[in-house]
View 1 (cartoon, one colour):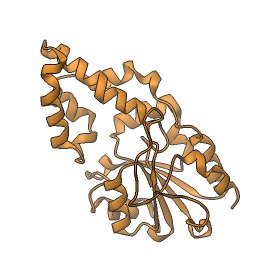
View 2 (cartoon, one colour; view 1 turned 90 degrees about the vertical axis):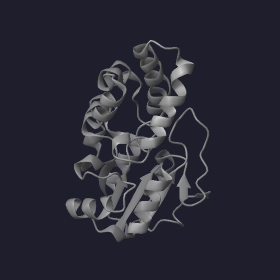
View 3 (cartoon, rainbow, N blue to C red; view 1 turned 45 degrees about the vertical axis):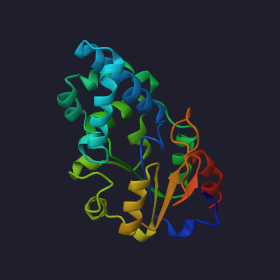
View 4 (cartoon, rainbow, N blue to C red; view 1 turned 90 degrees about the horizontal axis):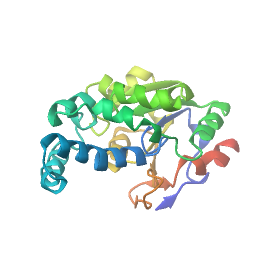
Length: 228
C-alpha cells in the first residue's frame, strides 16, 4: 500500500476534491452493522424462520445485486425483502457518525480554496437521513447521488455524466473512495488522482489497497492540506 503524502499529490494541480460519503467521510461501521446484523435479523423475524435458515439465501441475494444501482436503493430492498428498510435505518440512526477527523479535513480543504463535492452511491433517502444526523452535505459545496444519473459510480458512463453536470475538470480533481471497483472506474475515466481509504470502518482491520495510493483515513490528510 502506497501511503499518501505531498510527494504523491500536487495540491496546486487540484481544484476539486471528490469525496465518497460512507467509508470516506462517515464511518462505514453503521452500514456494516445495519446490513450484516439488523437486516438479517429483521428478515428472519419477518419470515418466521431461524436466522441460520435465511442467511444463505440472503447472502446470495446481496451478491446478485452488488455493484448495481439496486444495491444502493432503499426502495429496492424494501420491495425485495418485504421490510421497511428506511424505518429500520432510522431506528438505528444514532450510530451514524463521522470518521475521525473528517469535519476538520473538510474545513481545511475549504480554507485552502478547494471545491469539495460529495459523490455517493447512497440514494437520496439515505443521503438525507445521514445528513440529518451529521450535516455532512452542508460541509461540501455540493452533494450528488449516483441515483441522480441512474448509474452507480462503478459504471463507466456515470463519470462523464457527473463531470458534465458538476462542471468539474477531471484532470484537476482528486477522488477519495473506499471501494476498489469505484476507484478503478474513476481512474479509467481520467480523474486526475484517485486515493483509496484503507480504514473505512473504524472497528474493522485495514484493507489492502495495492492497486491505488492509499491513506488510512482523511484525518491523515489534514496537515498535508493545511500546508498548502
